[in-house]
Length: 344
Image 1 (cartoon, rainbow, N blue to C red):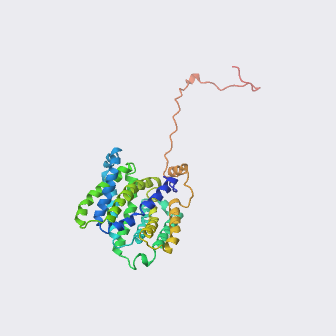
Image 2: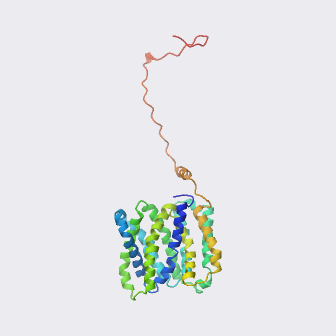
Image 3: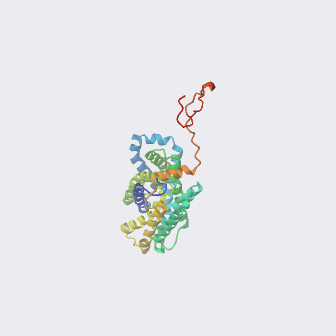
Protein backbone atom coordinates (compact mmCIF):
# COMPACT_ATOMS: atom_id res chain seq x y z
CA UNK A 1 0.00 0.00 0.00
CA UNK A 2 1.22 3.46 -0.78
CA UNK A 3 1.06 5.77 2.14
CA UNK A 4 1.00 8.92 0.02
CA UNK A 5 -1.08 8.11 -3.06
CA UNK A 6 -2.78 5.58 -5.30
CA UNK A 7 -0.79 3.07 -7.29
CA UNK A 8 -1.89 2.10 -10.78
CA UNK A 9 -3.52 -1.04 -9.37
CA UNK A 10 -5.20 1.12 -6.73
CA UNK A 11 -6.74 3.33 -9.39
CA UNK A 12 -7.98 0.31 -11.35
CA UNK A 13 -9.64 -1.12 -8.24
CA UNK A 14 -11.00 2.31 -7.42
CA UNK A 15 -12.61 2.57 -10.87
CA UNK A 16 -14.09 -0.90 -10.51
CA UNK A 17 -15.65 -0.02 -7.17
CA UNK A 18 -17.07 3.22 -8.59
CA UNK A 19 -19.01 1.11 -11.06
CA UNK A 20 -19.77 -1.95 -8.93
CA UNK A 21 -21.21 0.09 -6.06
CA UNK A 22 -22.71 2.78 -8.26
CA UNK A 23 -25.09 0.27 -9.85
CA UNK A 24 -26.86 -0.91 -6.65
CA UNK A 25 -28.80 2.34 -6.23
CA UNK A 26 -30.70 1.55 -9.40
CA UNK A 27 -31.04 -2.17 -8.65
CA UNK A 28 -32.24 -1.61 -5.07
CA UNK A 29 -35.00 0.70 -6.26
CA UNK A 30 -36.18 -2.05 -8.65
CA UNK A 31 -35.90 -4.82 -6.04
CA UNK A 32 -37.94 -3.09 -3.32
CA UNK A 33 -40.85 -2.57 -5.72
CA UNK A 34 -42.03 -6.11 -4.91
CA UNK A 35 -39.52 -7.51 -2.39
CA UNK A 36 -39.34 -6.46 1.26
CA UNK A 37 -36.03 -4.99 2.54
CA UNK A 38 -35.31 -8.01 4.83
CA UNK A 39 -36.01 -10.40 1.95
CA UNK A 40 -33.72 -8.35 -0.26
CA UNK A 41 -30.90 -8.57 2.29
CA UNK A 42 -31.37 -12.33 2.72
CA UNK A 43 -31.50 -12.96 -1.02
CA UNK A 44 -28.56 -10.70 -1.82
CA UNK A 45 -26.25 -12.17 0.80
CA UNK A 46 -27.18 -15.83 0.30
CA UNK A 47 -26.83 -15.61 -3.50
CA UNK A 48 -23.36 -14.11 -3.12
CA UNK A 49 -22.36 -16.59 -0.38
CA UNK A 50 -23.41 -19.64 -2.39
CA UNK A 51 -21.48 -18.31 -5.38
CA UNK A 52 -18.26 -17.84 -3.39
CA UNK A 53 -18.56 -20.83 -1.05
CA UNK A 54 -17.00 -23.52 -3.33
CA UNK A 55 -13.93 -21.35 -3.96
CA UNK A 56 -13.59 -20.45 -0.27
CA UNK A 57 -13.82 -24.11 0.81
CA UNK A 58 -11.41 -25.33 -1.85
CA UNK A 59 -8.77 -22.77 -0.86
CA UNK A 60 -9.16 -23.39 2.89
CA UNK A 61 -10.17 -19.76 3.41
CA UNK A 62 -13.36 -20.62 5.28
CA UNK A 63 -11.40 -22.56 7.87
CA UNK A 64 -9.00 -19.66 8.32
CA UNK A 65 -11.84 -17.15 8.64
CA UNK A 66 -13.72 -19.31 11.15
CA UNK A 67 -10.82 -18.92 13.62
CA UNK A 68 -11.69 -15.23 13.75
CA UNK A 69 -15.47 -15.57 13.50
CA UNK A 70 -16.31 -12.84 16.09
CA UNK A 71 -14.58 -10.19 13.98
CA UNK A 72 -16.01 -11.67 10.78
CA UNK A 73 -19.48 -11.42 12.30
CA UNK A 74 -18.79 -7.85 13.42
CA UNK A 75 -17.71 -6.96 9.90
CA UNK A 76 -20.84 -8.57 8.45
CA UNK A 77 -23.13 -6.70 10.83
CA UNK A 78 -21.49 -3.33 10.15
CA UNK A 79 -20.87 -3.66 6.41
CA UNK A 80 -23.83 -5.79 5.32
CA UNK A 81 -26.64 -6.35 7.82
CA UNK A 82 -27.19 -2.73 8.77
CA UNK A 83 -26.44 -0.91 5.50
CA UNK A 84 -28.24 -3.34 3.15
CA UNK A 85 -31.46 -3.11 5.16
CA UNK A 86 -31.25 0.64 5.80
CA UNK A 87 -30.62 1.44 2.14
CA UNK A 88 -33.52 -0.75 1.03
CA UNK A 89 -35.85 0.88 3.52
CA UNK A 90 -34.65 4.42 2.74
CA UNK A 91 -34.96 4.04 -1.01
CA UNK A 92 -38.65 3.35 -0.63
CA UNK A 93 -39.02 7.10 -0.10
CA UNK A 94 -35.72 8.68 -1.18
CA UNK A 95 -34.53 9.06 -4.80
CA UNK A 96 -31.27 7.36 -5.72
CA UNK A 97 -29.49 10.66 -6.35
CA UNK A 98 -30.06 12.01 -2.85
CA UNK A 99 -29.24 8.59 -1.38
CA UNK A 100 -25.95 8.62 -3.24
CA UNK A 101 -25.17 12.11 -1.98
CA UNK A 102 -25.66 11.09 1.64
CA UNK A 103 -23.62 7.90 1.25
CA UNK A 104 -20.86 10.03 -0.29
CA UNK A 105 -20.14 11.37 3.20
CA UNK A 106 -18.37 8.07 3.98
CA UNK A 107 -14.83 9.47 3.38
CA UNK A 108 -15.51 12.31 5.79
CA UNK A 109 -16.54 9.87 8.53
CA UNK A 110 -13.56 7.65 7.66
CA UNK A 111 -11.22 10.62 8.06
CA UNK A 112 -12.74 11.45 11.45
CA UNK A 113 -12.37 7.83 12.58
CA UNK A 114 -8.75 7.77 11.44
CA UNK A 115 -8.10 11.09 13.16
CA UNK A 116 -9.57 9.70 16.37
CA UNK A 117 -7.18 6.76 16.04
CA UNK A 118 -4.17 9.07 15.84
CA UNK A 119 -3.68 9.26 12.07
CA UNK A 120 -2.67 12.90 11.48
CA UNK A 121 -2.07 12.44 7.75
CA UNK A 122 -5.76 13.15 7.09
CA UNK A 123 -5.14 16.74 8.21
CA UNK A 124 -2.97 17.47 5.19
CA UNK A 125 -4.27 20.57 3.37
CA UNK A 126 -4.50 18.88 -0.02
CA UNK A 127 -6.45 15.91 1.32
CA UNK A 128 -8.83 18.10 3.31
CA UNK A 129 -9.45 20.32 0.30
CA UNK A 130 -10.00 17.21 -1.84
CA UNK A 131 -12.59 15.87 0.57
CA UNK A 132 -14.46 19.17 0.61
CA UNK A 133 -14.29 19.69 -3.15
CA UNK A 134 -15.53 16.16 -3.76
CA UNK A 135 -18.42 16.64 -1.39
CA UNK A 136 -19.35 19.94 -3.03
CA UNK A 137 -19.21 18.20 -6.41
CA UNK A 138 -21.64 15.53 -5.25
CA UNK A 139 -23.91 18.26 -3.92
CA UNK A 140 -23.87 20.01 -7.28
CA UNK A 141 -24.59 16.74 -9.10
CA UNK A 142 -27.71 15.94 -7.14
CA UNK A 143 -28.85 19.49 -6.44
CA UNK A 144 -32.31 20.61 -7.44
CA UNK A 145 -35.83 20.06 -6.12
CA UNK A 146 -36.64 17.71 -9.00
CA UNK A 147 -34.45 15.03 -7.42
CA UNK A 148 -36.24 15.16 -4.07
CA UNK A 149 -39.78 15.95 -5.19
CA UNK A 150 -39.62 19.22 -3.29
CA UNK A 151 -39.25 17.57 0.13
CA UNK A 152 -36.94 15.23 1.98
CA UNK A 153 -37.88 12.36 4.29
CA UNK A 154 -35.58 13.18 7.19
CA UNK A 155 -35.99 9.78 8.82
CA UNK A 156 -34.86 8.08 5.61
CA UNK A 157 -32.03 10.61 5.24
CA UNK A 158 -30.91 9.77 8.77
CA UNK A 159 -30.91 6.08 7.88
CA UNK A 160 -28.60 6.74 4.94
CA UNK A 161 -26.26 8.86 7.06
CA UNK A 162 -26.08 5.97 9.52
CA UNK A 163 -25.17 3.76 6.55
CA UNK A 164 -22.32 6.18 5.79
CA UNK A 165 -20.99 5.84 9.34
CA UNK A 166 -21.17 2.04 9.16
CA UNK A 167 -19.48 1.97 5.75
CA UNK A 168 -16.70 4.19 7.12
CA UNK A 169 -16.14 1.90 10.11
CA UNK A 170 -16.04 -1.48 8.34
CA UNK A 171 -12.73 -1.01 6.45
CA UNK A 172 -10.89 -0.39 9.72
CA UNK A 173 -12.07 -3.78 11.01
CA UNK A 174 -10.74 -5.40 7.84
CA UNK A 175 -7.41 -3.57 7.96
CA UNK A 176 -6.72 -3.99 11.68
CA UNK A 177 -8.40 -7.26 12.66
CA UNK A 178 -8.83 -9.31 9.47
CA UNK A 179 -5.96 -8.16 7.27
CA UNK A 180 -4.16 -11.50 7.64
CA UNK A 181 -7.27 -13.58 6.90
CA UNK A 182 -7.94 -14.62 3.27
CA UNK A 183 -10.44 -12.09 1.94
CA UNK A 184 -12.67 -14.64 0.22
CA UNK A 185 -13.02 -16.51 3.52
CA UNK A 186 -14.01 -13.38 5.44
CA UNK A 187 -16.48 -12.28 2.76
CA UNK A 188 -18.12 -15.67 2.33
CA UNK A 189 -18.48 -16.38 6.04
CA UNK A 190 -19.85 -12.90 6.73
CA UNK A 191 -22.37 -13.25 3.90
CA UNK A 192 -23.50 -16.61 5.29
CA UNK A 193 -23.90 -15.17 8.78
CA UNK A 194 -26.03 -12.28 7.57
CA UNK A 195 -28.05 -14.35 5.10
CA UNK A 196 -29.00 -16.88 7.77
CA UNK A 197 -29.75 -14.07 10.23
CA UNK A 198 -32.15 -12.35 7.84
CA UNK A 199 -33.81 -15.46 6.41
CA UNK A 200 -36.54 -15.74 9.11
CA UNK A 201 -37.28 -12.01 8.77
CA UNK A 202 -37.52 -12.43 5.01
CA UNK A 203 -40.09 -15.21 5.35
CA UNK A 204 -42.15 -13.13 7.78
CA UNK A 205 -42.15 -9.91 5.75
CA UNK A 206 -42.48 -11.13 2.16
CA UNK A 207 -46.23 -11.38 1.52
CA UNK A 208 -46.43 -11.10 -2.30
CA UNK A 209 -44.92 -12.93 -5.24
CA UNK A 210 -41.93 -10.92 -6.52
CA UNK A 211 -42.04 -9.59 -10.05
CA UNK A 212 -39.60 -10.75 -12.72
CA UNK A 213 -37.73 -7.40 -12.84
CA UNK A 214 -37.28 -7.49 -9.06
CA UNK A 215 -35.94 -11.05 -9.18
CA UNK A 216 -33.50 -10.24 -11.99
CA UNK A 217 -32.33 -7.12 -10.14
CA UNK A 218 -31.86 -9.15 -6.94
CA UNK A 219 -29.72 -11.75 -8.73
CA UNK A 220 -27.58 -9.00 -10.27
CA UNK A 221 -27.32 -7.36 -6.87
CA UNK A 222 -26.08 -10.60 -5.29
CA UNK A 223 -23.65 -11.70 -8.02
CA UNK A 224 -22.17 -8.47 -9.36
CA UNK A 225 -22.69 -5.89 -6.63
CA UNK A 226 -21.99 -8.19 -3.68
CA UNK A 227 -19.82 -11.23 -4.49
CA UNK A 228 -17.59 -9.61 -7.11
CA UNK A 229 -17.71 -6.16 -5.52
CA UNK A 230 -16.57 -7.34 -2.08
CA UNK A 231 -13.56 -9.14 -3.55
CA UNK A 232 -12.56 -5.90 -5.28
CA UNK A 233 -13.29 -3.91 -2.10
CA UNK A 234 -10.96 -6.02 0.05
CA UNK A 235 -8.24 -5.73 -2.57
CA UNK A 236 -8.71 -1.95 -2.59
CA UNK A 237 -8.42 -1.74 1.21
CA UNK A 238 -5.14 -3.66 1.12
CA UNK A 239 -3.85 -1.49 -1.72
CA UNK A 240 -4.71 2.03 -0.51
CA UNK A 241 -5.74 1.65 3.14
CA UNK A 242 -9.05 2.00 5.04
CA UNK A 243 -9.15 5.83 4.85
CA UNK A 244 -8.77 6.21 1.07
CA UNK A 245 -10.69 3.07 0.10
CA UNK A 246 -14.17 4.61 0.63
CA UNK A 247 -13.37 7.56 -1.67
CA UNK A 248 -15.17 5.80 -4.52
CA UNK A 249 -18.43 6.71 -2.78
CA UNK A 250 -17.96 10.19 -4.26
CA UNK A 251 -18.28 8.80 -7.78
CA UNK A 252 -21.11 6.36 -7.02
CA UNK A 253 -23.86 9.02 -7.21
CA UNK A 254 -22.62 10.10 -10.62
CA UNK A 255 -22.85 6.51 -11.85
CA UNK A 256 -26.30 6.19 -10.30
CA UNK A 257 -27.61 9.31 -12.05
CA UNK A 258 -26.11 8.30 -15.41
CA UNK A 259 -27.76 4.88 -15.14
CA UNK A 260 -31.01 6.53 -14.13
CA UNK A 261 -30.85 8.69 -17.23
CA UNK A 262 -30.15 5.73 -19.52
CA UNK A 263 -32.44 3.11 -17.98
CA UNK A 264 -35.22 5.24 -16.49
CA UNK A 265 -35.01 8.18 -18.94
CA UNK A 266 -34.22 10.64 -16.15
CA UNK A 267 -32.93 14.00 -17.47
CA UNK A 268 -29.23 14.86 -17.37
CA UNK A 269 -29.12 18.06 -15.34
CA UNK A 270 -26.53 20.85 -15.63
CA UNK A 271 -25.52 19.87 -12.10
CA UNK A 272 -24.16 16.58 -13.43
CA UNK A 273 -22.10 18.30 -16.10
CA UNK A 274 -20.67 20.81 -13.62
CA UNK A 275 -20.37 18.51 -10.62
CA UNK A 276 -18.72 15.50 -12.27
CA UNK A 277 -15.30 17.22 -12.75
CA UNK A 278 -15.45 18.44 -9.15
CA UNK A 279 -16.06 14.89 -7.95
CA UNK A 280 -13.13 13.50 -9.92
CA UNK A 281 -10.75 16.30 -8.86
CA UNK A 282 -11.82 16.01 -5.24
CA UNK A 283 -11.26 12.25 -5.20
CA UNK A 284 -7.84 12.64 -6.80
CA UNK A 285 -6.63 15.21 -4.26
CA UNK A 286 -8.13 13.30 -1.32
CA UNK A 287 -6.54 10.05 -2.50
CA UNK A 288 -3.11 11.29 -3.59
CA UNK A 289 -2.54 14.55 -1.76
CA UNK A 290 -2.03 16.20 -5.15
CA UNK A 291 0.89 14.01 -6.22
CA UNK A 292 1.06 12.52 -9.69
CA UNK A 293 2.96 9.50 -8.38
CA UNK A 294 3.26 7.91 -4.95
CA UNK A 295 6.56 8.30 -3.17
CA UNK A 296 9.12 5.59 -3.51
CA UNK A 297 8.85 2.73 -1.06
CA UNK A 298 12.22 3.68 0.49
CA UNK A 299 10.77 7.07 1.48
CA UNK A 300 7.80 5.41 3.16
CA UNK A 301 10.14 3.12 5.03
CA UNK A 302 12.13 6.10 6.21
CA UNK A 303 8.99 7.76 7.50
CA UNK A 304 7.98 4.62 9.32
CA UNK A 305 11.42 4.28 10.90
CA UNK A 306 11.41 7.85 12.16
CA UNK A 307 7.89 7.65 13.54
CA UNK A 308 9.08 5.96 16.73
CA UNK A 309 12.42 5.94 18.55
CA UNK A 310 14.69 3.29 17.18
CA UNK A 311 16.66 1.38 19.83
CA UNK A 312 20.43 1.69 19.45
CA UNK A 313 22.12 -1.14 17.66
CA UNK A 314 24.54 -3.03 19.85
CA UNK A 315 27.90 -3.22 18.08
CA UNK A 316 29.31 -6.62 17.38
CA UNK A 317 31.56 -7.88 20.18
CA UNK A 318 35.15 -8.10 18.98
CA UNK A 319 36.95 -11.39 19.47
CA UNK A 320 38.66 -11.70 22.84
CA UNK A 321 42.31 -10.69 22.91
CA UNK A 322 44.64 -12.65 25.13
CA UNK A 323 46.72 -10.14 27.09
CA UNK A 324 50.42 -10.54 26.98
CA UNK A 325 52.20 -11.37 30.21
CA UNK A 326 53.54 -8.29 31.92
CA UNK A 327 57.09 -9.61 31.57
CA UNK A 328 56.58 -10.30 27.87
CA UNK A 329 55.48 -6.76 27.01
CA UNK A 330 57.13 -5.37 23.92
CA UNK A 331 59.25 -2.33 24.74
CA UNK A 332 58.73 0.72 22.60
CA UNK A 333 60.80 0.80 19.47
CA UNK A 334 64.04 2.76 19.85
CA UNK A 335 65.30 4.57 16.76
CA UNK A 336 68.90 5.80 16.35
CA UNK A 337 69.51 9.52 15.83
CA UNK A 338 69.48 9.13 12.02
CA UNK A 339 65.85 7.94 12.17
CA UNK A 340 66.49 4.46 10.68
CA UNK A 341 64.68 1.49 12.24
CA UNK A 342 66.40 -0.19 15.08
CA UNK A 343 68.03 -3.50 14.34
CA UNK A 344 67.86 -4.70 17.89
